[in-house]
Image 1 (cartoon, rainbow over the protein chains, first blue to last red):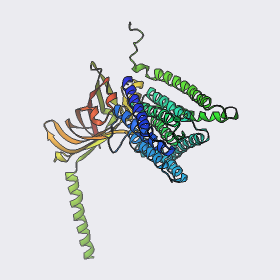
Image 2 (cartoon, chains in turn green, purple):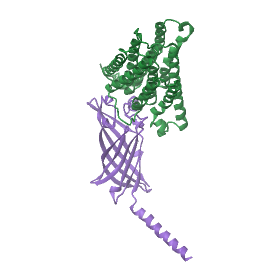
Image 3 (cartoon, chains in turn orange, red):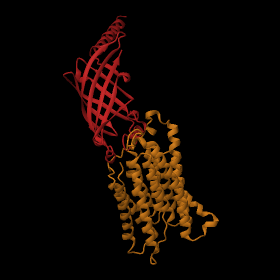
Image 4 (cartoon, helix red, strand yellow):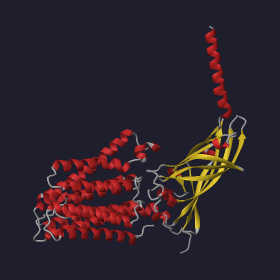
Length: 310
Length: 194
């Protein structure tokens, strides 16, 4: 049975460590955007590692389960790529190439050794497996690219906050679909995204700092994190394809504020509209997930039979 | 002509030696008979009662060498997806990654490495693989009596019971909660050959 207190502790630890790390590393010196982004990447890595450790994640090598591969291969790769992308003098096309490579390989890494690729249980033919891997890669690259583009166009903390919100919701939905550990991992991830964004924003609000809030690194790790949780929940748990797709695409609703009517409004208004637009479908997804949970899991919840007296 | 006859004689002699020898010492190969076998398990629930279940899809083979029992081998492959506890919701829950993770680990396998004859059966040591973890275990297989049908179909049967801790096989400790860590697996299998 899930222990809500344990999840809260894990989220709290991840958030505090991430935020403290950003503030400690970037508060004293005038932080440039490059420095701040690099600090954010390290802060997210630290926060997630501590949060997952509190959830008793097994750090065993080689990772045999999809969730282990996600935490021990995919997330460190995302952190490493975002760190490299922030290096001064790094050509933009190299960063794009590295991100595209990660988007292309992530589905393959997550499905490694499973019935989908091994051919066991007559799940997929080689052709079907290839098509699914390409589709997943395209979806991930598409969502990642669109959010990065939006961040470059109008920036703000609302995009990474929307990602954090969606990741948290994805975790709850995966848990309600029956995969406790997989869903639980999303909580420290969401907490570290939100805490890092807020801490980085505080740094950039100081008058003496030249850094402008720009969050490609946070968006990168956030999108990979969200995709990983959803893909594991869908392929290994019982999260429906429709639900997984909806959750992956919900952060793209932030693009709605690019309509001429909203685009040139005050940043706080644009940010608020984005968060509201993201929160509404998330609430609907959660309500549907909760309904399905009670429908599917009721026999296991210890409800008394009708003839029994209470 | 003489050379040809001589060559044929050699071929026949070698053939008889190899073929005949093989027939003399070959172990009897039995295929797992799903109809007359069962792999079931039970685990504690809340430490007050037992939950029973079974695996409906099992495959395997064993070879019995009556002359040299140490050469006998046993293999069993259980499809984890076929778990059946007489409750669909629970079965679906057990297939999830918190439990059997059947999409990642579709089978539970046992392969013998050494066999020792004991009174009334065999003591078989081998690799037991479940949930991605392989451990060496020893099974005490009781039985081994043979029964022959009129059509020449031979049957042999064994029974064994195995206690294991789910945590030893990488099952999520936080999911162990209401269902006890220790599980008892009961195997009653019949093999057949023509």
